[in-house]
Amino acid sequence: MELLLRIWPILFCLLSSVTAQEYRTLDLAKVAFDDQYIGCQEDMEQVLNSNDILSKEKQKNKIFRRAWEGAETIWHTKKKATVLTNLPQGFEDNHGIALVAYSGFIRKHFNDALRLAGKSYQYYMEDFHFKSLHYYLTVAVQLLSGDSCQNLFYEDELGVMFEPSNGSDIVKFGQFLSPFLDDGTSYSNESFTLTSCFGVRIQNFSQYPLENTVVVPGYEVFYLENEGSTFSLNSTGKKCSNYNCAYVRGDKSRLSLDHCISGLSLDRSTPKLPLDRKRDTSGSTGIMSSPGNIYLLIVLCLAAVHFLYTS
Image (cartoon, rainbow, N blue to C red; front, side, top):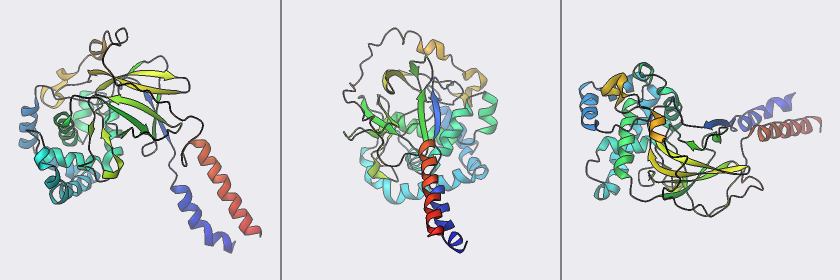
């Protein structure tokens, strides 16, 4: 018993470091909030400033306040000077701060909220407290987006993985995605490749610049290509949102996804970068946090405890 009391903190830390993997279905994300703010950015700027939305959201959301204020410090003391000469016209401080903030701990909280924020206009207005972050991040990605597509790969991010829905070959994420540049390394069986034509490299803005992260907007639409037990995503070159200018246009801002994606399943001629490499599906790289591996780790830890206790 004395031995168990001595080693239980080690066992607890080991088990708590493993995050149960959450699988999210890839579909059209019809209840997500992925506004593009087309034709209303000046109005949005005016409304955000006149209603002091950023300050109010920081007061309501302590996690957001900590993330934004920390990113604000990093932007002004470290990042801004290194990118200032290469910023496009119209890029403001709040756009840079939003990119820095997104690269940090707020990312999962923010994306979790986005995936439900579009289920109704009322829900977006009353229960979604990342309006300012979503607006500034969306505009930042739009301003920095180039005219070329990129080969990327996505790997289990903060315990979140995606899987195709049955019969769906046209998908979008609804949330922002943070894949990595495809650098030729082998893939695990818990990853997938994608081409994005609207994603933006944020290495110069990121709190973790060595990761080579790309931010892909939730409104980019992809063809889903099944490859046996794996899949890949190829950009259609099209952008579809559930709302446009929701904050300034009200409930009338709801859009029809069916109209936006009409014809896509029949016409796959949109130029896309080739995905000419296959993923390594023979095994995973490193410790994957799938339920089976969590169970195995628990068994091994308990066996080690039993051995130490009985020896």
